[in-house]
Every structure is written in C-alpha cells, then in structure tokens.
Amino acid sequence: MDEAGLSARAAADQLGHAKVSMTQDSYFGRKVARTGAAAVLEEIATTPKKSRKDGGKRGP
Image (tube, helix red, strand yellow):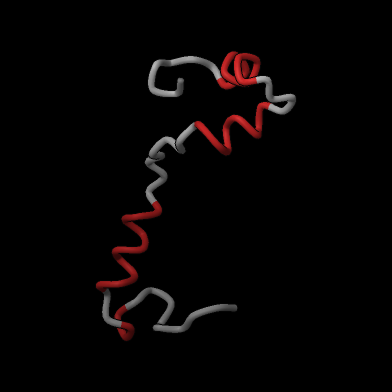
C-alpha cells in the first residue's frame, strides 16, 4: 500500500485500524531523509581527535 502511494489513512481504513499510527508502524516504511547527519558522523569518525574543532573533547 505504501509503495502504491496509498495514504496511511486510506490504508488504515481498509485494514480496519482505528489508529493510523498502527498502520504506519506495521505497514509503512520510513523514507530516507537527507538530514546531513551522515556527513557529520563521517567527519567525526575520520578526523583525528587532536585536530577537531573542539580539541578532541566530547560532551559538555
């Protein structure tokens, strides 16, 4: 239903789910979001600790 472009509400109605969240959690996949987080994590993983902007410190 997700791949066919059906809305979560329409799918929930067809399946008899009272809550759309039940349908979304069970039958709809998460879309890939391009948040930029992957690039940040890659930078952290590949940058030597001494040359990081924060001086290699982690946390507050």
